[in-house]
Image (cartoon, rainbow over all chains, first blue to last red; front, side, top):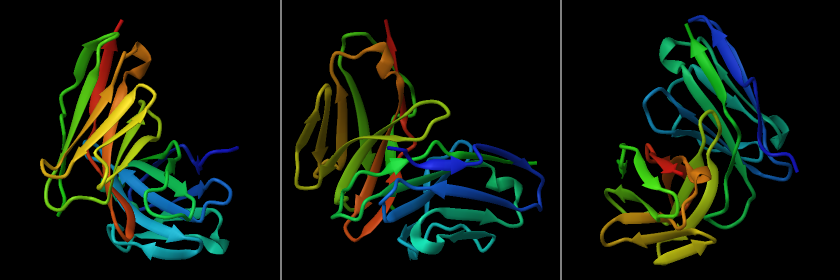
Length: 115
Length: 112
């Protein structure tokens, strides 16, 4: 069974450009999460989808970030326009819809460098 | 806001010994506390989850304890192996909210 896959694995863009990250969760997982780790900091929650609905987007840093999950399958995270402080690794994760404490599976991350 | 403290210094131990990693948190106790392993350039991998009403959980060579009075979790790896070398992350979550709050992780180095 395929795990959580993320694309691209690495991206280098200039300040002011747009980048779109994609995440394919494990098949059948209704919960999809985005996290990110910026240099020297801990991994921070961005948002949580249940199917196509945003359940919790309290971690989104500002309106330059837009996440979508049309159809409740894959998700995209767009950063527009990108700023230097957006550099870091963006992790996607997924889990089944069960009671609390279910196992969360992470992808390998999309490494973003804004220059 | 909730803060999680993990020892930022690397833990170096000899193969075969037991590694013990600490996770301390402030404020209110989480409903769930999880431990993840992360290798360089990879995503976190789930290891163990313990609920607030549980004191201890085991899985093979791994053991997690959870003390809500001390606001602390200990993560043990017995009979450690060089392959256990990695960064170990503690993460908390609360009832009604799936978001995880991560600690910064502790790097474990097991010497052969």
